[in-house]
Image 1: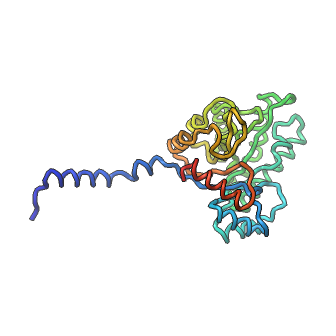
Image 2: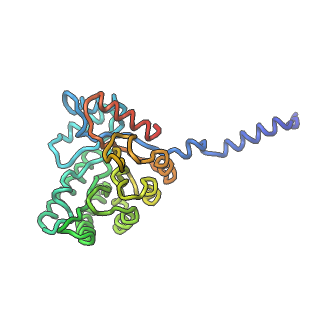
Image 3: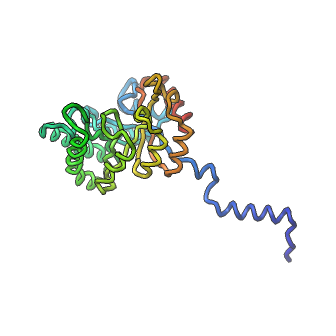
Length: 289
């Protein structure tokens, strides 16, 4: 036997049905998925790689990013990662400032390409999915157009390997006088027409060029696969996390709008446990974790 619903009961049932049709709360729907990481070279711990990974985990980091080439023992790194659950999420091409892919000399570009391909192989070996790359440098010997054309030609040579190993070459925004506007990075990435070239946005680096980080994020959209940051103030220059002009509430809003699901890696210079704990807490605050 059924009974007619009273007015109060009707609204309760209606509200419950409506809620069941929404996949997540408004707060959850607007919150990006962010995993917190530290640059591996910045972890100062007594002991071996395992001790460093254990310290990273203790301080609240879910991942690390390593340099390539380096003297690191990749097998030991993988073992430490598996033992702690701290992921090696990315590899940094550590010679891209010296052996630039935009250099006038072909032999220098060749060394840069070899390093990039080595970093791609290292990424595969440790279970990472990106190689961070500064594509070139504009200076008195290299124009913007030359940097653009030369660096793209070298990246294209590395693309078959990246596609085979399923490693993404992530173009980072830095103070190299090249790619200082979001539209330029969009065009640079899109030129390759490959899912294995993407954007690695440094939120703090680009503040001095006048476009808000949140606007960069919105324009890059899904092209941005990872980001790192420190703190930058137009008045004071480099500062600690949370003390710069990044406008983190707006950054978080933009990350949510583009559906960001990825890593956020600090770049303020690591240290011992006390220092890493301070960095970790600051990251939690600005990232809303």
